[in-house]
Image (cartoon, rainbow, N blue to C red; front, side):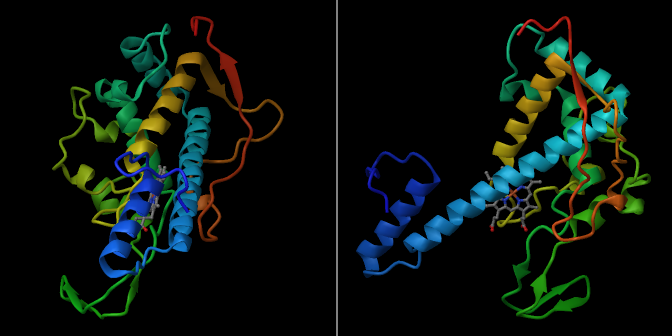
Length: 253
Ligand code: HEM
């Protein structure tokens, strides 16, 4: 593996793995990070990346069909911050609080990775008076965190403004709602692709809002976006649907 690998020229995840593999081989003559492990890791990363980004974008389109008022506000923010003469870039997002709120609300509402991934508890742990025994497998229930009525009040409403204060600015990171929005999970096994996902999803959403209006299909029914109605099979899947893109006349890109 790694015919094109050059020491000192690290191009990405595969090179980082090869570097670690070679360091361990030089030190001990053996490495747990075999070529098979590296291939598995790359496969997992590609599969996770493609499916998760697709899930957010699909739900975004469905929600835009159901909530034209949200789409209008997104378009106004895109027009104000980016305009219609250049492509959006990831850095624009920090000036776009409403778009940030919509992204958080899509991840909360849909909770597209409802049980994260299973974690093995290696030693006995006491948490809030409960004993979690070594060897237990834990499924973090992000779906339940994101739909807890005590925290959210109206968890089954799609309402991006919940993440903004009265002046339309993002809530501070220590606010209860910000502490409870954890689409990428938390801790050292949290999603390693989150920054990549955030920037790609933002650029795609902003580019669409810049150029088109997303509207329901003409000759078929639009399924509801309510996550309580998604398939309960694991992994939970949102409904398939058709929608239409109407070009915006004022977009010149
Ligand atoms: C909106 C998009 C995404 C969401 C909501 C998401 C969510 C998650 C969640 C909840 C986990 C489990 C973390 C845990 O159990 O502690 C996870 C793991 C993972 N994600 Fe993502 N993810 C997204 C995009 C991506 C992308 C774009 C990539 C790769 C480019 C990626 C790669 C991975 C990998 C490799 C893991 C397993 C990490 C490990 O085993 O330690 N994800 N993701």
